[in-house]
Image: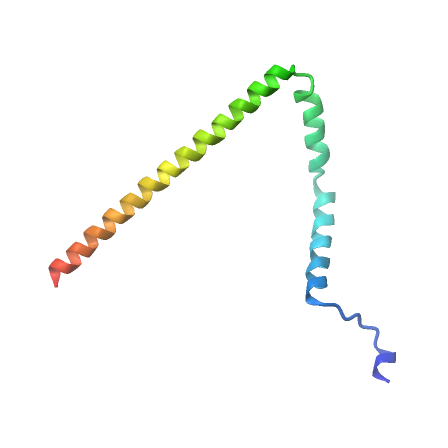
Amino acid sequence: MLGDKMFLKVISVGEWFSDIYQKVNSWFKGLIPFDEFFRNLYDKYISPVPEIFKYLGALLLVLIIIFGVFGLIKKFFKFFLIIAIILIVVFIITNIVK
């Protein structure tokens, strides 16, 4: 019959996407060894540093991230404020022209 002659593997859509993910993941693993790079970086530069400097560095990093997020929020607020003012001016001008 038809099933005897054909050797097609029927897979679901989820298995197909999972297979693509596995192929891409294995390709990326062979492309650049990130895990080994960061482990060597930690062993070479961070591990020899005394613990107090590690804690101070982590605190400094957290402060930089927090202030960076606040700065980003402030810039977005200014941007949306400017966009709102422009839209209000355009709305007023279009109502005056009518």
